[in-house]
Length: 407
Ligand code: IMP
Image (cartoon, rainbow, N blue to C red; front, side):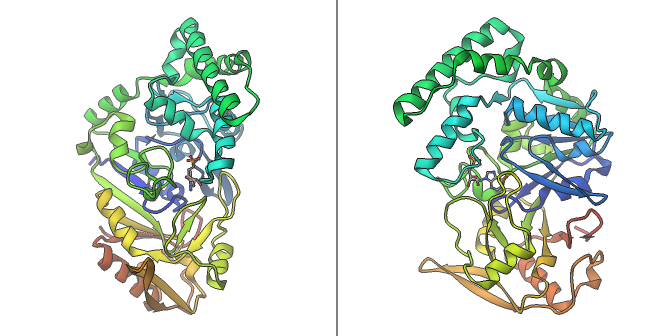
């Protein structure tokens, strides 16, 4: 039976979505991205080889899966081209299975420059990829869309207007060097082959696949707490990272999402600035960072680490209509004497329930029954608190280091 599944992060991103998308890809016809851009970084380990994907859906590693970049994504053609070439070099084929919506708004070099100079002053700790400024132009109805390649004269015209505008912002607001309009136009036009090869009516493709009862996987980027509306505003990304973003970012109604798998780490991390109730500044925090290799996949920045925040997680489960929870990096908690989870906030401080740690390793365990009792108690407590079953537990970075349980 066909089933369309949404996989998204319930925290501030980096929950390990890539591995889960990859693991669930076997019976899937298409994997679709619906928001964000190359600010995302999905690290996947297959056959011992580590691959980081920023823009292209993780399904690309499976030869028979279609991959879609929906209209809700902001597209850097330079980043896209690099990523395609890198994957092609490893023998991956894109022919007839990689589709980009004509509605995607483009990220221009001037967006990137504005993002970087602005973040120096306003310091949200963005990835510096031009994401925020590109979405600003989208909402302001002046963005260049991928489909604009259809008419080169019009594209030139729109580009020069927009880049001139960006240059005024750079010059007058930030006292920064402008970027020559011609160089931007030349750069964008040099990627016309991407339009020729991959631009498509992706809503039409989805319509057909739904009618043919093909299974589709919607792949979220970033996480719920970075959502422009539901996240820790203004310390958020500029897109709808939550379940609602699927419908707007791909043009598919919510009733076609059958299952929502929400991914959470067994603890919490955050890259960039902004509130983080359970952040740790002690040895436990350092140990989480070290054992969990908590460095940003896109920027290499160290991630801030802390205990699991069940208050925030419960809200994220509600926001996204999560049907199944997936707990990742449980093995990182191996060796901790005590493990805390936040169950309330009082006077702006987290209130913790403290668990005993476990002596036996969870690393690499593939059967739920083989988990140590203390780890099971931890899992049960989370399930009961947020009111949702944990049906997948990840116990290591490789595909096979995964426990699956009945829904
Ligand atoms: P932007 O998306 O580059 O505008 O950055 C806005 C905020 O979202 C910053 O705090 C980033 O660190 C964070 N962010 C963006 N993408 C990711 C991601 O894939 N994982 C974790 N944090 C992210």
